[in-house]
Length: 400
Image (tube, rainbow, N blue to C red):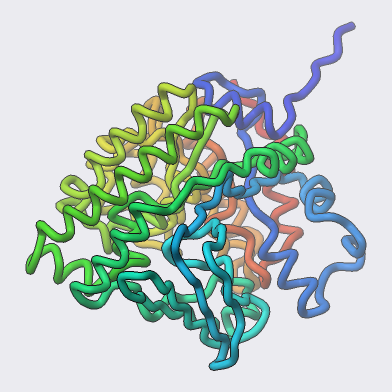
């Protein structure tokens, strides 16, 4: 009598990325926000007291997705100063940072306030601000960048000066340590900075600044995009030394901001080049696409993306699961990762509504490849027992 061994969470995910069929649909996502908020406000269930985050994942039955930056950047010739609520907070010359240009490394996330930072160079200074609201702290969310870096022509010159000089710093050993510690219970995502247009939109200029520049001075916009692209291509080249099957851009992509016209003009050509580089290294390429994808359903496959991670359907966006599945389901690429919106884990949603939603997804998927997860992630106020129910339901669902 033979005993069938079930795949681990990691093996299932790797099978999907590799174009193969797993024994069960992978269910892999993030509990760190839920865990951090519950620890912070003293509402962690008693059964999880003293457990590591990975142990909580094991107990619940959901594989752990861990975002890990595999490198940093040394800001050569740059002095960085920051204040928090007007008081000195950070000061270093030529720091190594993981998040550039937004410098989220130095922003406190455990208390409300404003972090104002300066990047001081021999050719001038650029300034940005992040704001952390008390609601943001309570929910474990990221701070909001309320002042972007580039306001005038002199700021552009400083940004180009820094881009010319910043140095790549590999942190591969740290990535490998995280990935090895997860074992079969999870997967470390090689999490990269945003692609050029998303960097400009979200950190360098902001929404209004970017849209004005597309009309007022498209040549200046293209020069900045191409410079960011040049350095990003170098960064991707270094990743040949990291043995991982998947790399993902932190793009926070949404069709409400990067509309189809902008997407085709300023996203697709760059993304196709990055796909060629990463595919040449044996890696699949993904993007954090947690916004409204409805405007992009017809054009997104042109980008070369293999994975749309953290797809966030209604009510988190204006796109239903069925709309995405009608557009992409059953095709080889892109793979949907996510698809279960976190509001289904809230008290105002009944258990019956959750069960009907998950059962509908499983019925529609059939044998097609997908990675299920809670999008954008499991929130601090979500019911962890509903995550357990989803995990058990997926485990009971046999692929034909």
